[in-house]
Image (cartoon, rainbow, N blue to C red; front, side):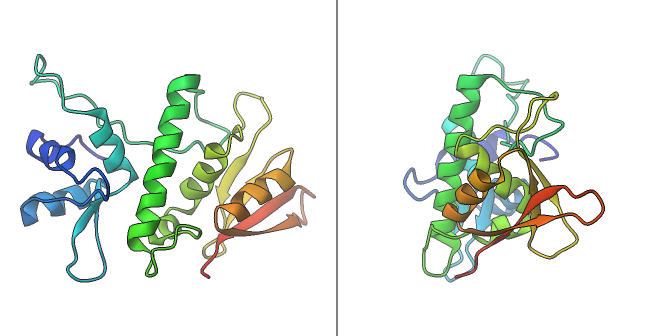
Length: 204
């Protein structure tokens, strides 16, 4: 997200329905939250707006401290760890963030899949393939590669709706992704002979 939400936008997020994440606000406020990645517009009538996983995290963070109105707290947009480059975050706090993000994603699936199914990826995941696959792996307890420590790495591929997953233990990664609604196959790269998974979000 390019900038933190305004105080008015935060109030709309904080006023979301605690169960469904449904938002109430002006058209301008809701459109701004969509641009910030904190909300999405439901594709079916009446086209209500709901929190995304990032919006749920912002709402759960609570209101900004009253003692520092001129220095807004960062929105804290969650980013799944794709492996290879990120710094290792604190253990306990990171686990809570991952759990909350996964729960928010399940709600997003329920609200946006035509039949309300949570056992297969939704439209947001199909447009954020690398982050979505990495979140599924991290939420299941797998560790990303970091500073020479073996772990998974998720990378984009030239193929539509497919990511490559590398790591020392491919079968557990495949089992996790398949349980999260992805379909996986194991392949060997012709040039490097490196084994990897090719994973795609399942449609049915």
